Image (cartoon, rainbow, N blue to C red; front, side, top):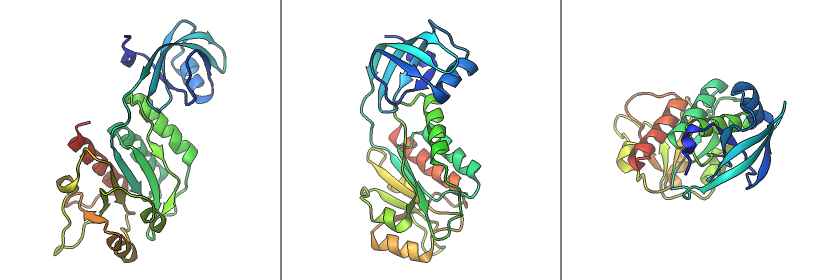
Length: 241
């Protein structure tokens, strides 16, 4: 079996055995960044657990023709962490979160529309490209699922796992337990991260009525994207992945 970790990796969502074409961003990276040519070896992934070693058979100006060889089916995705997070006003900060959370192993991300949230600009196509790039860079077999932006109430009304938490510092008299002390890293989990204006009292009351457990991410006041990544890192540490 070839060592696929040593070969450049490209995203092909409709990956099939045999011959195929890379175009668009993936072809540009292959041809004009890495300057690959016919005969070079690459790895293809569909982000759904399928990997294929492949050989470039033709390198054009805007597309790459390849032929697959060794085909690998990765193990099914293990339980993971889903972060529902209020987008930040600065897109660069939210994009940083997307990249780093993917590297750390996040399973799914939902932009969460909260009462105190910023008027962020939603760029799902660009965000998807960031997830793809991070998936390839850290050699993940599965692309994190990026959900559509969802209101706080609609998210609470959706089907949520037993391990659903809401990050909230609480008060001096009532400090929630730390996420690391209540999280099971072997089961699916959701952590809700609010905006820097925090969740509203109405949202906190609604979450409490739905039996959502409040958790702390530590004594320091964290920015939204840092809090999201802290939750992912906690899960990664407990799951040892």
